[in-house]
Amino acid sequence: MMLKLVKAAFICSSGLLGTMDLCGQQELDDPLMVEVFQNAKGIARAVVENPDAYRLQIIYTQINRDKKGVPHFKNYYYHVDPNAYFNPASMVKMPLAFLSLEQLNEQRIAGVNKHTWMAFDSSYPRQVALLRDTTARDGKPTMAHFIKRALLISENDPYNRMYQFVGQHDINKKLNQKGYASTRITRQFMGFTEDQNRRTNGIRFYDPSGKLIHTQAPTYNIDSFQFPSPILIGNAHMDRNDNKVDAPFDFTRHNSISLEDMQQMLQAVLFPEYVSPSKRFDMKEDDRQFLLKFLSQYPSETDDPKYDEKLFYDSYVKFFFQDSSHRMPSHVRVFNKVGWAYGFMTDVSYIVDTKNHVDYFLSATIYVNSDGVVNDSKYDEETVGFPFFNEVGRLFYDYELKRKREHRPALNGFGIRYDKRDPNDLRTPIRIVDN
Image (cartoon, rainbow, N blue to C red; front, top):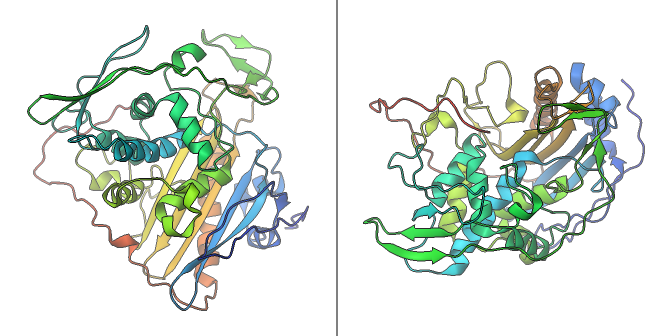
């Protein structure tokens, strides 16, 4: 196979303690990426040979340690363009989880933390109150449980609740202040109007006995957004009434984050001391460890919430390792978030192999909608998307296994102790979710 080398991307690295900041537009194909893709087969080969047709972008990050064990990160790019829109879908749940824990930490309200019982009011028309979380063992909504649900199988309502807690104004202000300038998060997954998305619910916090300890008032974001030129995708779309409209779908005012920013957000939580201080999230170490656990724990290991592990198998949200077996290698952990909607599929992952002493970042987004009709729920996920991610995951995993390192990393998976299912728990597992 001959892959066309369009233009070599350049690497932007500060060289300080392994830190790096992505800079500017990385134009198209890095020679190392082209080398790896020489071994691509089947669907993966078809996609990488036609990256524009699939709106493909890939970032691969090597991690090399020096003799003191300090990691140094080096990014390689394939067809990456921060100005090329893709819908992040559920990827927005990742920064919302980070910001929610940051806000809890910065508020410093006695008794209010990720495990505190929360109740959401309906403060404006169409808002949905939440007094009980039926997926929780004790039925009490908490930020910790929302984050678990958002990360383990990518449920949607937890995202809405995190959005309501942080608020549209602070979500965008904080992420932009941290340098994630591509980020624009404007909507919940509620079918709301723009005005309704600017409004948040009132929230009450209770101690274990049911005593009210804090009230968060509803808010309204008065700031304006700067939207780009119209983002029109597809040749037709289905409207809210399920009628076909012979015109492209308008994504201009939808959520938006570049692949580089998402990779950097994940790196900022996994390796906070090796990214610029401005990019870090201000959270307690206990909260960071909680995130690491549920970015990588499997539904089969988790009993609160207790998901049906046959439907929500271990590789369910691990696209780079999702094959027909639905199993994960026992010595591999993937710290990641995925998103899929409107034919867009994205995975931003940090992969650790403790047996072979290998770790690296791999991020990719692809558009799989061959009929060109957006919002019809007829996409090529099974025939193109999942096979593509699995093949690309295999290519880079194999490359990493063979890659020589001057200093072998000592990897222990961050020392996380994963949960185990209680064999005596006879509760009916959760089978129906909105994700």
